Length: 431
Image (cartoon, helix red, strand yellow):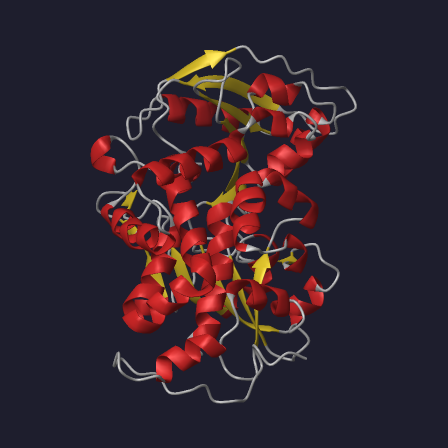
């Protein structure tokens, strides 16, 4: 077994003095990010496990924050010596191919092989979860998916979404959520900014050395995701980058030697790799619906068993409603999702003409569907400017339950799922 994670050897003492070789020797002796990832899956057979995981949707922000924060925890020796450390990618292994910007650009550039990662459907994952003693959440602040049974083991949170107030025992510095309750907006466009700040603030010398190690692999990965999430444009210029993101990018682009022109080119490459419509032509509806799915519970008191009274599922789709409904497995896939939640939304990132956004509202209950549509269309915070469209969707007689649905163009394209999710929770609380 490798000694990267379970080593009992005390690392060289760290020093904040530039003249001391201690911290430099320590960094030189550490594995690179790629070496850490490769060894990580082989170090999961101990009795004690700490899992670092992004949200179930598994976008670039969730994947990269989980991996780079696990690496950070290892390098700073912030885990018990006998505990295995695993960055868990919670979605199916076969769906990694859907993350073009992560797999084909970020991973290829820094040398990470997806085969080395630990996925939610791997044969060894159930046993891994049974031996897990601590869970760290990145890019979300309430356990989801296969980690729900481990909710009482949440130890730390690194996120940029509205605080759900779940896991209230996680406090102070262990609960690092870049979101302003007063402004109802994130203070960082990307959770990768929150992770960057961990590297940068604790020990500037060591943190910078880790960001620079292996030709800036960690810095490059974090920079790419911040560019994606912030659209490479600051808020004051009509983009999504907050001041914290801008400050992070200034450091990261110096490490990676990216000027403004190179950064713009990289962003365009990442954006195309993520949204290229041709990537989805041969993908099934079930793959598309689970590609970027997040689930949100009502904030009202749970039932006697501790389950939320109502839930909403929101899938972010890279193709239009018309393209989705044309998939052969569309109705089977939709039926499965609608049956799991009280309200299920499909938010598309384009209309049939390739521009704008759409929302498909669905529910197994007609009352909930109509109430949701009335709630969303009358909302002023945010005002989605919804315009109803005709949706051709024949529900076969063999479907075991009714599906009620309505489709809309979202003419105000500014609000994203980050704004619509809280609105959905507000709606659930009215039921």
